[in-house]
Length: 375
Image 1 (spheres, rainbow, N blue to C red):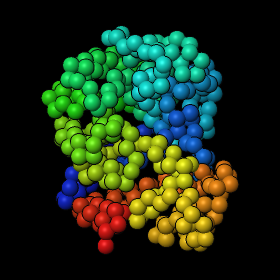
Image 2 (image 1 turned 135 degrees about the horizontal axis):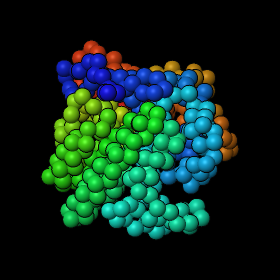
Image 3 (image 1 turned 90 degrees about the vertical axis):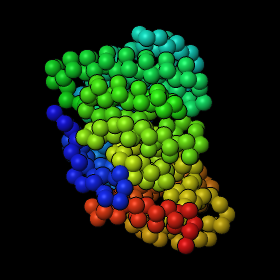
């Protein structure tokens, strides 16, 4: 059964509005998903996220597996019982963290052996185990285990990653189908790899499409490549995917990249950037990013963004937020993170409205012109 329905296609671009039908509520797309690595979106409560309007957030299988451990989460009734989040969860497989955080890892066709970044203990993650862990978490969308690659590797290494990822997908799907017979309702997404080689992207996409999972993610973008390369491969890879499935680009969270993704028919995206930059004193405005910690804000009693209707902008000044940042008050991280997530949520609401009016291309052009300092 399909979990995705397209509601409207924009005549001026590849953008589209849709709905994801998930076990814990319907999600409108395009959708930005806040990242709650350890079962919490940093500096924000569940109530904050619900107040903004989110009903799909991320959690990380690798981190939760290592701490607090599956026994604790399972005893609480899964991730939703443990965290008391009432909306939907998407979990990644843990593969990216294994490849980026582990001081030791060895990849074979069977899986990946790695050491914990916490205590150095040895673990093994297979595509089957990644599905089993996410099933214990009770996630609404889970990701297959894949091989993540940096942007500047050679073609032979990229080809090997494609082959291993495709083999792991078939094993993940078998395990997911078995979990479904035991009452698990979450969807499995396949992942397209191929690095920055067009023929490998085509091959990986074809194998992901053949597996016929409920959704497909585009991996290996926004990994340090130049902007023009990102834009090229975003458009190219998106064009390889079927229209009737949700498309997910992992790890993008700036207004520019989000709007480019929407214009290329991408439905889902996530990133730690809005909350991470918020904690570091950087906030989104319609006129570009603002560094709240700069001295020029010390006596500025204007809100972060006069065009923003979030409770932070309706209540507090730039001067106050700078004061909080300089005195290292936790409230600064809370307010800046709330604003940044509200800003992206509102951006996507406006984008959906533009799609309904067949004017997304104009909306994108006008937003980015102002965001980049144009007239």
